[in-house]
Amino acid sequence: MEKKKKSGFSGSLGFVLAAAGSAVGVGNIWRFPYLAARDGGGLFLLVYFALVLTFGFTLLTTDIAIGRKTGKNAWHSFSSINSKWSLLGKLTFLVTVIIMTYYLVIGGWILKYTVVYLIGNGNSAAEDGFFTNFITSEYSPIVLMLIFLSITAFVVFAGVEKGIEKFSKIVMPGLLIMVIGIAIYSLTLKYTDSNGVTRTGMQGLAIYLIPNFEGITFSKFLGILLDAMSQLFFSLSVSMGIMITYGSYVKKDIDLNKSIKQIEIFDTGVAFLSGVMIIPAIYVFSGIDGMSSGPSLMFVSMPKVFSSMGFVGNIMGVAFFVMVLFAALTSCVSIMETLVANIMNICHTSRKKATLGIGVISALSAIIICLGYNVFYFEYKLPNGIVGQLLDIMDYISNSLLMPLISLLTCIFVGWVIKPKWIAEEMNIGADKFHKEKLYIVMVKYIAPVIMSILFIQSTGLLNKLLDMIE
Ligand code: PFF
Image (cartoon, rainbow, N blue to C red; front, side, top):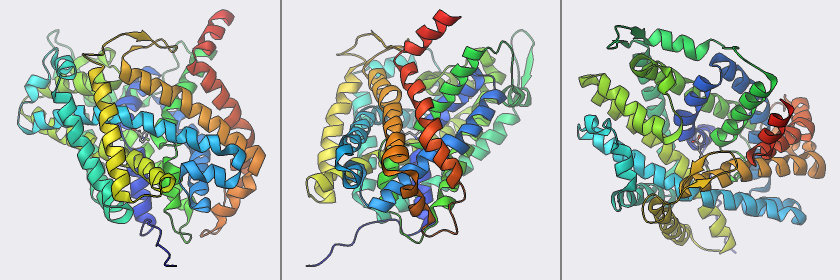
């Protein structure tokens, strides 16, 4: 029987850039800088960097090694190791299904702003109500979402090496150049407001970098730790089957230790530079108090900053939104690829049919999310205190509930059922040595499960109630 060649990355660079493409996304640009500004600047940075080197390394290593060792995507990898744990694979599939629905909608919004700046209409994007008017309009968000989905599907349809790898090799270096360029420009900014107060980009940088310990209590520090932790999951795209799928495309002669280090550096580097790009710019033109997180940072605060810059603002706006578009596309490609790879295996079907099927289902569900801002509008208070619509509910279920739960179960599975040696064996293939084996064992068996449990309890809102009772 003719054996079909398994698709995969051509080499280490292709893998690292594709994985970094998945990791670097809107999370780096709209969440990281905000958390850093809110959680004590340099203090948050220190905590985050420490977590990347410990938790980030552990979770990324686990996912990628499981993928390469089993050669299977998330749905089948866990069941192929131990049939009793097949539910874990299915849970990861569920997370990607949920994320896909709303990531597409956000992708459509980014595309809209990219077009607005490209046609030189940036000032209108800075007007009050522009963003709300746009997302609550009936057709435009749906049409842009569908275009964003078509680009994503086109790349996935072209396959792992010819689509995802090639696309990442073009887009990721471009993204890096743009982040560095805009960050440098941000540092040169200077503005005197109507009260005669002059603020500079370098002052904004100091706010970002210098640790602020003012008013730090134990529960505040715990809050910062948990913020950094949940940011880390989302940012590294771990615990959602994506890195398992990408790991299954990596050849055995590649040193995973090196690749993992490079992915971490890329992702953390872009997150850090996004802070250098955004915090000084917002500080100079609006003072840091006006900084918000999530969509309003990118779609409301940044356009106002660009409009205060005058003529250059439109050019910076184009560079900024093209960069965000690149980041969102490569992340969305990784989500769709994971879904397509799973469906190809489950239904024994071709890439073409799987991409088409997933494309249609994702389009329909994303349309429902778009309609969550008009036809299906309602307000719902989530356990973490956020009042949100359909998109926020999906985000809460996937990021706050399922991701910590999957991480917790994966660590228990690796630490106590199959044992860390199973992972260490894979990390030694194609490498001199798995240097951080001892750290990995302690993390995966003891530290990670405890912290993941706390994170999970926090997401349900119970932890804050407990802390309130203590204080
Ligand atoms: N890691 C991406 C970010 O930081 O924006 C987000 C992401 C990509 C989340 C892929 C989920 C995912 F499946």
